[in-house]
Length: 244
Image 1: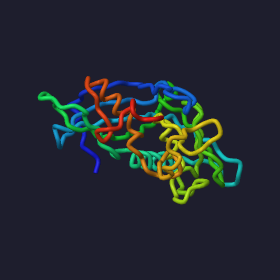
Image 2 (image 1 turned 180 degrees about the vertical axis):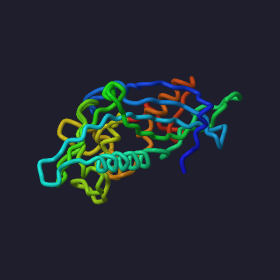
Image 3 (image 1 turned 135 degrees about the vertical axis):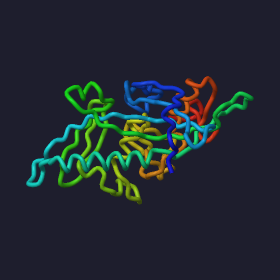
């Protein structure tokens, strides 16, 4: 169950947060990747909720086949399913907790909630964090992210399928969403990806569907900077002690 945000108790906010390039495993830094806001939990005043808001501008492209035209109902269904799949997979997977004790320590934990919004109106391109092109296809080819303005998804990208080399079905776009949060591929690739977690094929950034504690370290680092003390995922995993 997701935590309940107390909208009247905002602790910190930063819009258009940039994800730095921290190693050669990811090709680029991402400017204006998302907004971060920290609130108190309505049900637990000692808990915080980190709201991660990503605004996407969708550009739907028709396919070159008989039933390849997007209609409004198809577009709405695709966006709704993308939101549901990515928000469910990436929200509330690990606790972020302080690594220090103090008499005046107000909060003992933070949980993450992902919120995907769509940019609308004439200035939607400038309001969005990510520009997403979605092409209608008969058979899946590839979903990928080159940079913030070159995200290519397919109409089949939310259909569960087994990736090459995998043994379990997953949704390709949910994996790609991890790149939007700043994380590189963890499966072996020629010249790209990272080699530290090749054996963890269940990882969402590898061939599986599990969000690991290391996939929250950017959030823990942001909380640490805003609250002035070290916070870590599950009390141990930080940006400094994680290989990315």
